[in-house]
Image 1 (tube, one colour):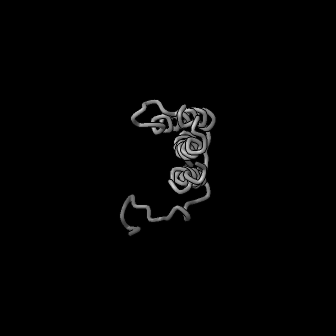
Image 2 (tube, one colour):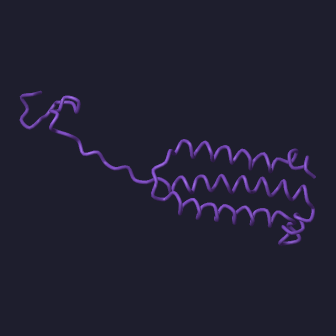
Image 3 (cartoon, rainbow, N blue to C red):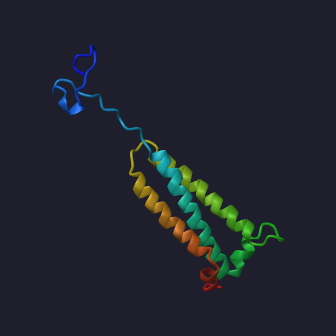
Length: 128
């Protein structure tokens, strides 16, 4: 193959030392991490609000925004508000940083687990 004109069959490891590759700078992924972790915070907030409304009937009454639906309307509204506040706050703090996506994913899974556990009826009935 070396007889083909203009063909360079060398591998990057075989390049001369003076020939260097331009390494691309990594783009900050803090905005992505902020969005993913904030989603986990919102899920955990829904679980915590569900447990709190089962534990205190006055809190459940406070969360009742629409009588036919009961406190579910307030639970969902409060969880979404907490999610939005967490997202804006985390995005403002992390948007220019390069972070580990895998760690953010693990944190989000843990927060999602807290949220699922809090909305599981046998769990929140323990506090009622």
